[in-house]
Image (cartoon, rainbow, N blue to C red; front, side, top):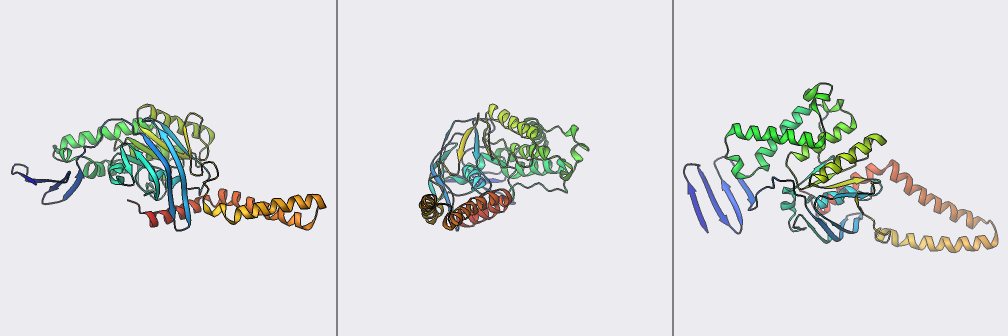
Length: 343
């Protein structure tokens, strides 16, 4: 153990087991030995057999992915299929229960905290919600303050206040430019309340807030929710520009453009979970034999009942996927957070 005391800074640094503990009279700051990444180098994303199981069963399972730095990854699927949970798992905010993954050189689930240091999420309900009563400028100032206080390195905290303020303004301006949000185009400029923003402007603001930390990996949830066709194309153009700049982007949507790296939470239909391979398989086989017999005998009651049961099951799934998708997502997310733990 090596102990170094610098009286001019009033700081005591103790190095032990590869970690640095910085002690002052006001705070105890624990960080890993790596410095924050200031560049725009993206993070490679590789996963094999990744899965997450909650109290109600598998949230997602069998996810395999191989994407290079600077890729635009699209998590496709209907609402309630575990898309948001997979997004949070790939950004280090939810702990998977099976499989292996390496994101930005960090192995999951062992290095979740280190991955959170180089990743950010945007537009995730319950995680990055914008406050409708606050203005755009207030959101930006709050984000810059939190980044300066908790996200920067120890060396940055020791810089003069004027220099730190200048760097914070530069970070915000750079993030706004990358997100394509022009404050002058808003009704009241930076004093515009979030409740008065258009849906695409809310998305851009959420992305800008995430970019303040200069992440290597950016996760964006529900890219196409409540957007028109033109706005949806505009949102994908934004994500493409971020990927071209070097940041790896993981986006959640129902359908994605063909130039993305696709990934599904239910690959190949065989990994839809044990719930759908049990009695569901038996019912389908039973119904198929029933249909064959009913066809040979004519239009009987058994054929009608089996047809109704099948249509009821399929219709129920589709309707619940459309109307109750958001509730399913929230419930599954809450269950997974309780079971697996979220930072």
